[in-house]
Length: 150
Image 1 (cartoon, one colour):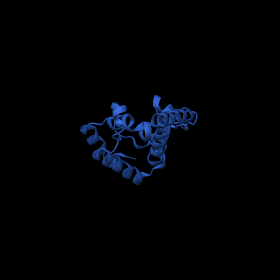
Image 2 (cartoon, helix red, strand yellow; image 1 turned 120 degrees about the vertical axis):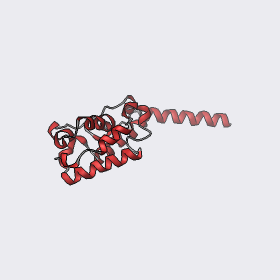
Image 3 (cartoon, one colour; image 1 turned 135 degrees about the vertical axis):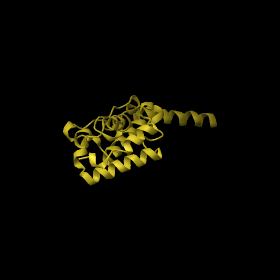
Image 4 (cartoon, one colour; image 1 turned 90 degrees about the vertical axis):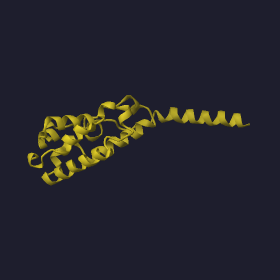
């Protein structure tokens, strides 16, 4: 009886996973105006722009590179949700919406989250080892002279 129940349960789970593949989230990248980007507006040092582009752009820009697992449900739902939330919180492709004060605030938040090890997220780095930031890269991001921005 228990064995039959387990077989039934696995069958229902397998059917649910197959059906879930037909329910896919939006995985598009909105158009991006290069003149509105972080690099164009804030004009950070090249090293800082490179670190932020490498470590942050997949979730915090309109240039997301969607990995293979973003096409497999239920992982696709989680990835799409993370990108949507990331873009809403901070979008390097739309930096022109931030004024000088907000630029300072956002850069301070980026620095703080990197120092705490919260960004990039711990769960993201093993699948994307190129996003790992070094202490010297964090120092570079945190030492961007505020006067240089804008």
